[in-house]
View 1 (cartoon, rainbow, N blue to C red):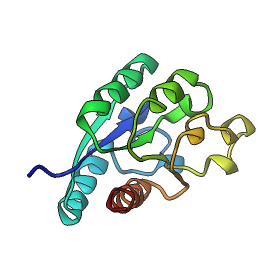
View 2 (view 1 turned 90 degrees about the horizontal axis):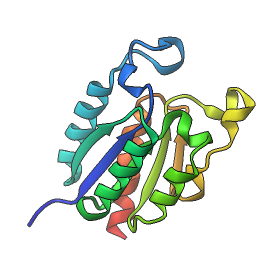
View 3 (view 1 turned 30 degrees about the horizontal axis):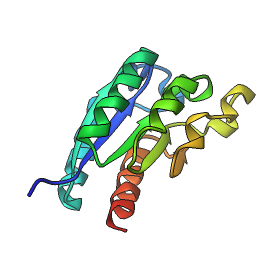
View 4 (view 1 turned 180 degrees about the vertical axis):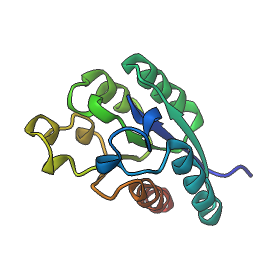
Length: 147
């Protein structure tokens, strides 16, 4: 029997994690996030796959792929959180749990970051916990899958 698959989707500029504005986003890289989530996934009895795109359409395609390949989605849409109805629409086609992650606390930043279209679909939102937010989201989606 195969383990449940969790897709971890990342939006623009997250490929620069660890090098871009470390005072806001920390020093961990996206590879570190993937490694830490994979280790936790083994403990929790699931598998993870990490993806990143700087393009809105690429993120939409990742969500479409997840429809057939994943039991849940963890998504950090980056700046597209605040602008992308297309990503929201794609997430609305996904039947499993969706957790939204933001490394920084978007509510303590510029006012345009306070609104997220993705939150309209998310089953939970984790913001301001650094890259640990991905692991918190992983724990939550596993709990949602168990119900």
